Amino acid sequence: MLISTTADYDLDSLHTRLHAVRNYTIDVHVSHAFEGGVFFSMDPDKKWVKEQITFIDALHEQCAKADFSPARLHLHWGNLNATELYHNWCTVNNPIEQFGSVGCLNMLLPQVVKHTAFIEHNSTPNKLFTYLNSAQRKHREDALNYIYENDLLDMCEWTWFNDWHYNLNEHFHSLIPKSAEGLEWKGKPVADVDAFAMSPELIDMHTNTCFDLIAETFYHHDVHHYSNLAHMNTVYFTEKTWRALILKRPFLLIGNKDSLTQLKALGFKTFPMLFDESYDMLDDDKRLGHVLAQLNGFSVESMFAKINTAEVQDILEHNLQQALKLSQKMVDIDSKMS
Picture 1 (tube, rainbow, N blue to C red):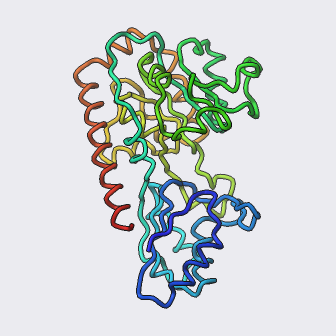
Picture 2 (spheres, helix red, strand yellow):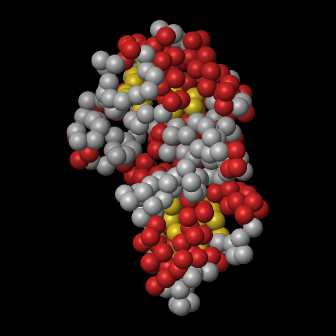
Picture 3 (cartoon, one colour):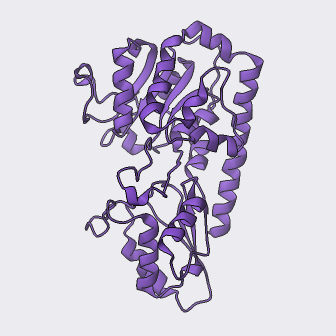
């Protein structure tokens, strides 16, 4: 039996479904494959408050409420650290019964493969990099402020899909929301198309630039405000990273510590010949600054020449093929559960 959950899923319905099958000799597979955070967001009635309960705690509570053995539950989670996170949680919480299995299943990748158009870079781009954002995050604001304050804004294609922020430079107050033509935010055209679709304008943003500056959903581990949860470290990739791999794009990654290490463990290659990737191992207070400082040392012409070397082109092709293989593996796992 397969139960798919999202950030907005009402967990009380999970309890009801587990209770209904508790006397049958079947296992239950819970797919949380489009989410990677440790916390479960609030449901509409605010019964589950993410600052008070982790997703794993919530699942164990629902098993207990349904009188359903956790050993019959198999969790498939978008977090790359899923297995390690659950092991750490069990070490700290010492449950009477553990889940039957916990592993990573990230179904954002197959969605991106399905909807991403392949592009060719046939001429020298006009700009250096893309910096595309939708939801507000502090690390995204800090990066956009840096880009403006270091006179790099004209060298990038950037978006900011909503009109709220905490600390954006006042220069941006009259410019946001900003999106690619044909790719608007909620209530505008993008709401009528698949969130992973590539508009012609978005394709142009990529063909007009050399590489991607990716600001992932998580920069800090999402438990970094909670010292009692230091054992729950998140590494999570969304469509932002997957799209760069599929579009054969070099990238600098503003994400969790060890993100590049995790990508390599999945069989991908990165770009130490283009960037100083030692940032991947730096702590949160230093990593962002180390990434952004590298933007000052490039020109469009020199970067485009480096990207078109055989070494880099081989890596880009390798990453595309690896993404397609991994996507098919994810699809196969999902199909077996269904």
